[in-house]
Length: 214
Image (tube, rainbow, N blue to C red; front, side, top):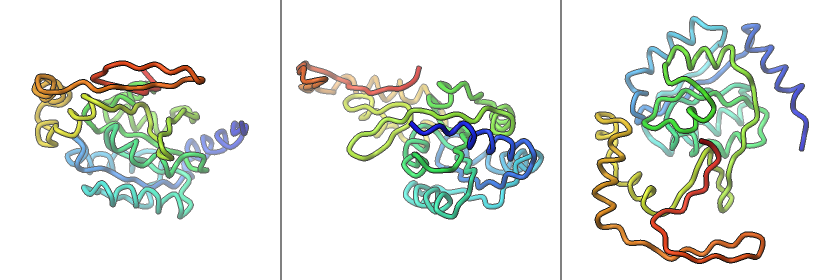
């Protein structure tokens, strides 16, 4: 493993000194993001972080491409606002890159932010961006695709796909429970085979989840 402690310390000093230039990408399809975009820009403008470019985006594919372009352009600090899906969709561009990934939890569940102890309150989350600790985090990887805090197949994935964005904006995390109850009634279990260190286990499952976090 490469020791990046000196590099992280240098980035932290840049932020604290007010000389760190950042880019902001907000997924406006996330639950709170569209309403919070102007507030985010205002709070960042009052902080030590200098935002050179800001992108409110409601197209998931364009959001992924924009994040990749910003990393390729050499930004040292890219702040991403959205939920767990937003974060997992862009982390491939940040894995092993010399760039700081800032998280603004603006989604429905915000499990990744909760695991890292990032406050859900907007002002407090921005304070973490300014004064928080720069740290490495673990990523999972399936078929050359990275994910942040968890990946699943089965019932939760079906619920996630079936839950409308409008319902998540109205009900928040309770939207998943409402749709989940409906999906559970008709969902069929499936045969799963797991192999770990040449040891094979087979079982019926409604959900298979790989998680790194709380």
